[in-house]
Image (cartoon, rainbow, N blue to C red; front, top):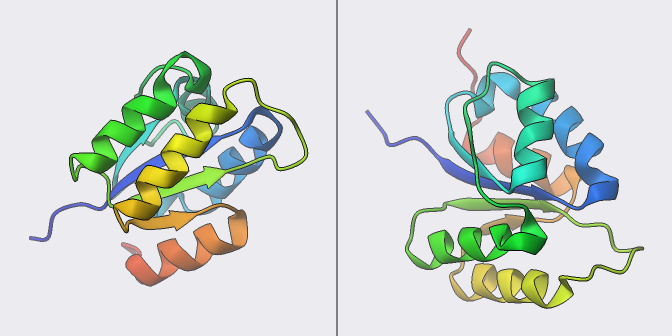
Length: 130
C-alpha cells in the first residue's frame, strides 16, 4: 500500500473561507491524506469538514509557518497549499517569505490559489474511493 500524501494547508485570514470551501469540495480525496495546518486554518477546516483529521500547529504569526517549513526541510511534507492574500499587508511577512523560500528550495509541490490546488490534488490523486 502506498504511503498517504502529506499535505500542509495554510490560508491568510481573507482566504480561510475559500480554503475551507476548497477542502469541502475535495473532502473524499483529502480524507486519504495526512493533513497538517497552521492553527486557525486548521480550525476552519475541522469546522467545515469534520470528517477530516487535521493536525493543527501554531497560528502562522506565532510560529506555525516556521513549523511547516521545518517539516518541509525534514521531508515530512509532499505538498504545500497556501492560499495567500496578495492584497493585504501581513505583519509576519518575513515568515511567509521564508516558508516560500523553503518550499521552492525543497522542490515540493506548491499551490498558491484554488485553481492550482485543484490541479495539484487531481493530478496527485486522480481517483476517489467510491
